[in-house]
Length: 424
Ligand code: ADP
Ligand code: MG
Image (cartoon, rainbow, N blue to C red):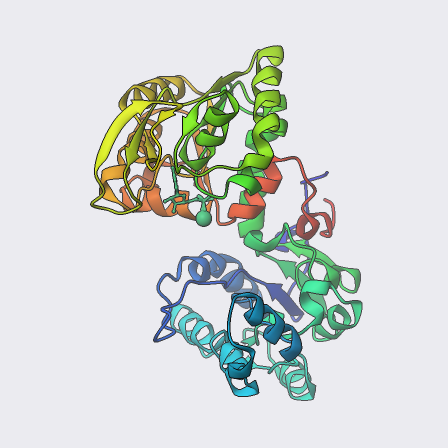
């Protein structure tokens, strides 16, 4: 796949109506709906500001959460989650949609830009009122469409919905790196109907992550951890083709320990991947790639911040105990392994860093990265949060805004939201 894509700087945007796909999928307070972290909105500002300064009229759009635009499907999903079907009224469904309204985003974006951001659209996202508002939008002005996932056509990449969105604008700019691994109407489909280029955020992500993978300063060390084991473990196969060292921590480690005949108690385990783990160990040997697994682990008698803890050898976890962090010997091993790295890509914390007792491994690795001269790239929302929380964010070369996208990038998969942009 070609990652050398045209950007907003390669096209004339003055006087154009620009449909700008952002990643405004921000975390919100469950009760008040207040945005708890506006990092993603801030990350889009350089592109927005550039477009406005150049005299474009910006029609921004994004998804927010996972609203279910079909009442019947919503009832089905809620029932599957164990809700009583009798309690599932149209009113409750509408409330669930309202909770994911873009209003707070429009407000925050307006504050950050210092100019009003009109919110337009409802569950139809592109209705006649929206079309009129988009048509009346002047150079230097910005409006925001309603949650793209309010429309059933969004996740299905329905051409009609893509066409309707495209009809609002002359140019499509994608800056939603967090969503480029999804072929949805607003992330890929619209590019069938409009010239499509990237914003600065996507360009930066492609430069850093693409650069690190295509032509890395060696040795290239990949660190994998976290709890989304089944969605991450598959990346190892491709990483074995490009990395010099792969370090496994977090929840993924226990599937390896089990595969090698160890006992893992109540630790996270993906039983479907046991054979795969053994294959990866064999492939690493074959290729001469160092695949580092924990030698010891911090265990807990329950998943709680004040659990009783102990340190045991990997694969020797007693029944009813669970591994929640890498152990002290492993920390030493892993910190040594990143010391002389040329490039480090890190996706997934080493332990349950949200609990102080199990944050030691993640902290040590973050510190080790902050001390290397290596290019350091952090992918994954929780990894980024951990690095931030521990105070090392400024010391990293690049903190990616897309967890899933950066992972699929590493896996060697084509990113539909990037593939659809014009080549340079
Ligand atoms: P990221 O968002 O960086 O991609 P994930 O979402 O895969 O990472 O995983 C992050 C979560 O993994 C954290 O909330 C952390 O508490 C959890 N985690 C790390 N190690 C373990 C473990 N051994 N057991 C259970 N959860 C873990
Ligand atoms: Mg996560």
